Length: 348
Image (cartoon, rainbow, N blue to C red; front, side, top):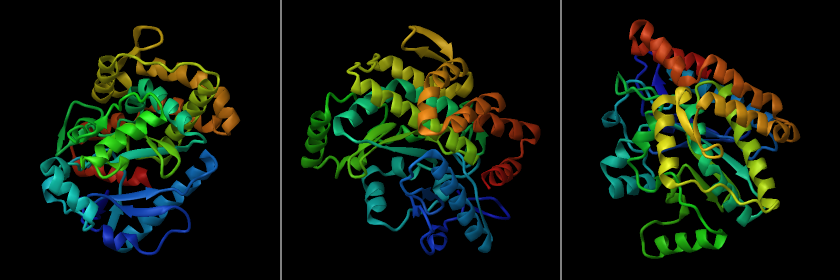
């Protein structure tokens, strides 16, 4: 979020924030002029990604402050209104607004994307399919948007239902193979429904141009250490699924309605959600499921050199995720600007 230092309102200032390219990674515009995206270059490990993210955050903070602005990271701006935001002057975004109208304009939300490089197309499809049962847990852990338009919503992630208004979002279909994925994309693009696969905004998708599987289910994180902890969880989970693919194990294929209900419960309750455990066949708490998953992923994290960062997921469980922190700050005084000031401080 690009914010005014005095009022803490969103500011349409992306063009003045871009400047020269950073030493590593990218600073990019998104749909709205008050939104700034930072992305690392491809990193060999979680430590490198963490160092780059911290450097990028410092860089954009310094650029913002030089212009009387601030930077904050959250799933939503607690009192921002989409009606006050300008669309970035790029043809892709203008065409999105022309195509989707109000639905595109109201997407004043902020997400976290993790790309994991894949060596084989069919392996990428296996991993994308295998991640579907874990998406709800990632939403619960990353929930960081309990307020919207100046009001508590009763949800831990308000971003999830707001983003759901777009087409081709949320839970992805289960693809049978890389060829199946290609055929489906070709059908939609050849008849003019979408330009290319990047117009699929599912919670997880293969990204052929980058050679990655992209996980898009999570709210933007205020604290950089939460970003890195979730990144370590994701990459360790992808390693587990890759090994299961190589061993010929069939991925879980739970019923669509259970996966969808889990996503809703995760957005509604965050860490307090009771989710359906697709392996045990019973409902379990998100915290309990996270502990079990972290233990299962520990050897994979050690191999990847991110065991310490994976351990920070447990710290997130103990101290609470971004949504719980926002609720605590807001409930003290019901002061929205105090909350945004807290977000700014923690982002830095």
